[in-house]
Structures are given as C-alpha cells and as structure tokens.
Length: 167
Image (cartoon, rainbow, N blue to C red; front, side):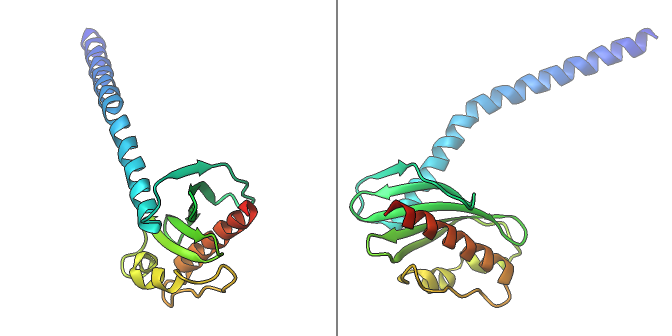
C-alpha cells in the first residue's frame, strides 16, 4: 500500500513539475509569438499597399461573421482580414480595396488544405484573377478546388460588404 501511495505522489509531483515548466515556457514565448503575428500582418498590409505610411485598425460591422479585422491605409484604401472555412480547414485572407472600388490586393495568410488542390487558392494565378477587378465583378472559382475557392470568394464577398459599409 505504501508503494502505491509513494508512486502516486511521485507521479503527481512529476506532473506538477511538467505543468509548471510548460506554463513558464508559454509565458516566455507567448509575447514573441504575438509580435511575429503582428509583424506578419504588417508585412501583408505593406504588400497590398506598398506606398502606405500608416495602417490604422478601425471598427466595423459584419453580418457574415467572417471579417476579423479592418485596416485603413490612410489615403489609399482598406485591407480587410477574413477567416472562412475551406475544404479542410480555415482559410484566412487579406483583401485590399482602393478608394475607387477596385480590389488591389489579395493575400492568403493561413491555408492548410489539400496540397495541389485546395492550396491553389494561395497560388499567384488565383490572386491575379482577382486583383484589379471592380468590386461588382463576379469572381470565378478554380476548377478542381471548387470548395476552397468558393470559400475564398465568399470571404471576399463578405469583405466587399464591409468595405461598402465603410463608404
């Protein structure tokens, strides 16, 4: 009986120690990870609006629930971050709109889909088929990646709705 109690206490002590180490590592790495996420968003915003000096996060209303953030590139337009369910996982995109109702940028910031099929949404060909189009244009899906590209287009439509509500 004493052996069972001592083994139980030893296991509890090891578990508590492991939990404390994990909590410590998390407290050290969490701010670094957050800084990297912020830097990645800034880099994506800068890709969409390369001449913008400043990006300001603004409040918005979104009925779809897909739009996560809206950034104003002062004097140039808006970039809207959208997360939507693709075929396999969530697709996160950043869509840029100029002040003349055109899509000026499309950046996939998170995509974990079927390689070679669903990942076509993240390829330059898909972005090039979107960039430069007026917001009134009906966008086409990708053959063979219909679910993921349809999801991306639904996300773009949600971004357009929010963009229009800002003007």
